[in-house]
Amino acid sequence: MERRHYDADHLAFAELARGFARKEVAPQYLEWEAAGIVPRRVFERAGELGLLGFAVPQQYGGSGTADFRFNQILIEEFMAADCAGVGLNFALHNDICTPYLVNLTTEEQRERWLPGFVAGTLIAAIGMTEPGAGSDVAGLRTAAVDMGDHYVVNGAKTFITNGINADLVIAAVRTSPERHRGLTLLVIERGMAGFERGRNLDKLGLHSQDTAELSFTDVVVPKANTLGEPGRGFEYLMGNLPQERMQIAVACLARARTGLHATIEYVGSRQAFGQSIGSFQNTKFTLADVATEVAVAEAFIDKCVIELNAGRLTPADAAKAKLWASEMEFRCLDRCQQLFGGYGYMREYPIARAAADARVTRVYGGTSEIMREIIGRDLKLTQRLT
Image 1 (cartoon, rainbow, N blue to C red):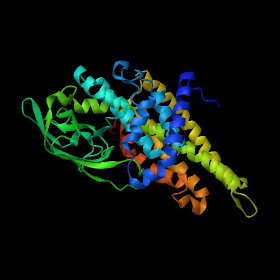
Image 2: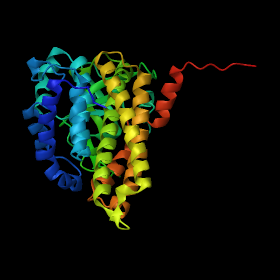
Image 3: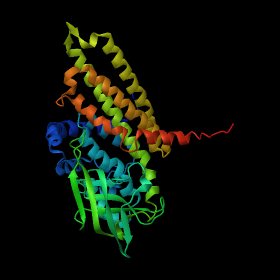
Image 4: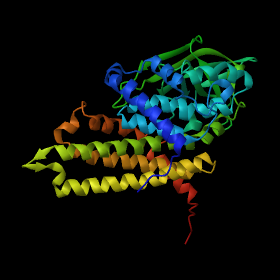
């Protein structure tokens, strides 16, 4: 079935993104996986090519387009090049942080941060998750005490993507005891006294994507670094979660699709019992199921991206996309990995890295259980007494 999701401009952008991913990222990718981090120069090179901050207005260096299909293409090309870790670094910067820095900033903040954000010299991260609060965003405890013209911040964050490289951390902090109305967003910058980074966490997968613990000890943050209005942080976070979940869904689909193509190629060349593995009925049936699941997911996710662009994507539909894509990805990559036999367990084979990378997608951005809760609430079920 022909995919008609992209127009000529998107396809031209795909050529640019593909060249960057395959020529400038893929050859060094395994080195960065071993190092546990991507060099900052990679962001700067992406900035030079116009691959960062698409939605940033032109006067600050961006292209001024909020069309998420460009974000989708960049994710797909990183996945197709088997560079998922770098893809997540860029997705966090582009897809998750951009709406906060474009929609909630003052003119002074835009002039201060956006040119570097687009150029890749200011790398962004978002600090939500804490050691004692993950999916329960309203339970965050990092505190910011109002001192007149500044806040004093104390607390800790964990599992922060881009945590080592980040220059700008969009941190959710508690400015009052109110559970939902007590959160405020502050931008905590590299070099602020008391802002320290812990270890680069040793993860199951996505090794080249730096994930860190952050700590704040009496960090003085000027009120000029407040994003939006104080006390509305929970509202802002919830408002941007549908796009974050679409980013995850797009990545899950792209990784599953890449795994399918790699497996088709492998089983066509690998022989057992005097014939290709691909000629066995079990192989055909397994890959038929995988191909069908990928195709169905693609149709729904592409539709959701269009709805996101139009401002109509509901939290429930974003949750459906994230839930289905992440669970589908895990099922399909497991089946594909099985067809590689022992080689599927070797990290030199992309299918092994993809399977490890995929495990977290059912957790971050909201667990599958939380997605089901969101979808279930949208069904407006009522309990009837009999």
